[in-house]
Image (cartoon, rainbow over the protein chains, first blue to last red):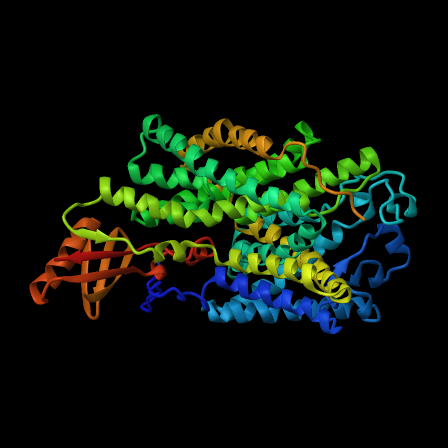
Length: 505
Length: 78
């Protein structure tokens, strides 16, 4: 435990606004979204962001050019050299995140070094994942069939394989070069990156709301229902099994039940705080959660696509209820989105619009995140009444709910509602400009942040931490695969079956 | 009602409460609360409230990206 003498306590409602990652995800996401909205004034402040192009290695080998690998996000910056765009993208993200790191009191030297290496690794994985033999699909999309254009004789046809490559790279380093991975930990912040990306995804949801308001509302409401199921059904079952068959004490059973059945690490900490458990309990449980989240995100997307290829939204929502931690859930949702769209494209030649399956996974998870504060509050009342020391009279402040509320969700809602308001009430020209800016930030920026998330999830996942946790790992596996995954799937099917993503324009 | 603010930590295997330069330690949180209450009851006029704010610095920092709050609690002494 840290020996710092400066306490970090949440006394006021605004505590943590400048020194927590949760708030910094909100600030960073809103800032980037704000830059995108400058399109309203005909200012393109975001189009410089670099993104990879589809490329083919023999073509590149015979005539190397950076412009075959990278391009800017907007045609207004098309004259920029790709390396200039790459360097500028690095600098902007480095400066913005280092400001956040400074306010959060991190070691800036370690952060800058770590972020630089993580950025390079992430970019390499992002570019490699766009090699045509890996990702080109033999189908025409927006007038291009890259498989045919590159005259490929074979190809994996995976669609976007960059996420998997980033995850594998991170995992290899995290498990086979542990000292190097540890040196990157100051910048290995998957939750920060993914929460910022989710704020930007609010822009996507805004655009989606215009295209299919009923569909989006249904997604949101079904997500809320799913959250109730997670709390009221999963938790008591897992708690009962942990106590009855695995002999865990009350503290450990409650913390583990929340971690397994609600939203992973954040739920285990919130629950431990609610029952005032020793902090070593959620620390131990969280190692298990992080490793299992990685297994869930690797196993479930291909499994769901294989067993239920015609239920993409059901699969997305089931993912949101099953995969723990925001980072792993969003990552699993992104893989699922990619796998489903590629499979559908290969089978029908029709391309589903990107992001709807991912949004199903994230909306469900966000509801679960929102309710964690209320759940912890209720649990505190129960613990105070039935379990805790009765010698002193205790009161519970409602600000406990606020302190546990995920603040990045506020930014996500602000972006979503802002988009809906503008697109409903602004002029046609403004709407066009807003869509343009929003598409860049929720496209290139969000995908880059997702890539950072995949890479850093791999970097912090150390499978050797499973040693000595056999009994807990067994409980986790039973609860996950025998209870949570099947029930989550059933609930997702009840609320979402038959829903399909729209076809891409 | 008068309020006193105490910072709560967990280090090693002990709960620690700090009020200014004063410090109480106990392996059991109930015992710690009793020590703190006894101190204030002996010196100050009742009723009052003791606000115990958990210091997040005593939780490993990599944890903070998942949850930024552990718990605060209020003890009321009449």
